[in-house]
Image (cartoon, rainbow, N blue to C red):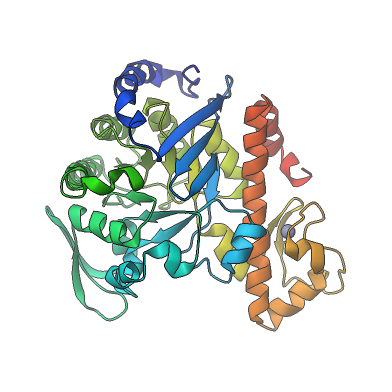
Length: 410
Ligand SMILES: [Zn+2]
């Protein structure tokens, strides 16, 4: 397996240097079954990767898109459909929300998130940092953590790097994220630098705790640090270099999709992804649109998540091979055809556009369920096709097709 080609030749030197760093640490991780990443293929033209992420709750084929189940539920979806219709091997849940309600101790007393929500497959939880910064009021960032007031009842809480590891361990998540400060956009260089450095200090503390007092649980619960640095390439490089010293199971790239133009997010990924150890999964948080998924994968990204498919579904915006469909539009009123003739999900197998439009206009609950099944299946099908193309060596053609909009006929 070679080093993947970078899309930006200027970072090639870092690639070489950091591959050596990761090689030196391989033996450490070999002893940490069952959590490990198996790299199966790298596209020689782009650097797109196919692999298998082994977790205590099953194997996650990568590249993967993770549906978002904020409150221990993907809104509107039966877990059964998430397994059988969408075939999601992993979902994301949310530490901030579950900490506030029902409380991580409650979830722990009930055996953890997996039995609590009856989800047998893998779960990734974010640290809650992003929600503290986007939802809560009166937050105060301090060296030891972030103080905030609950958006539910105004109660005061403090998230610390150590505490958010403990909360996620109580939830029993397979992949945990360190507490980070998600830098706002736009952010000045100085602001982005101090924010990134705080995130790095917090990550070190989180790992000290995770590998110190909580080390007995390390092999069953991976912890990913998060690369920050705003839209400043050299800060991103510095962040990644510091975090790689932690020799984590995997690495996340955060602080994207915060309002910046898409080329800027892609540029940041182009800087960071090739630096990260090739034998570890790479997760870009909070992206993206269907046509963006292959762009991130082409830059060496293995994991993504976004509320887009599920939230848009509930709002009547459906992604199909024929483009986006706004279901309330009058042209669907008497359309007896399926939502997407090329999709084989439960919704497309059984219901017409006209019926879906009726459900949406009547504000029936069933619309959310049927729309979400389809949108998530559409995303996961793109990931599956993309993975197949990386394995059989046709990813460049797949990418070209997506760029031409050919995905809409695929
Ligand atoms: Zn469908």
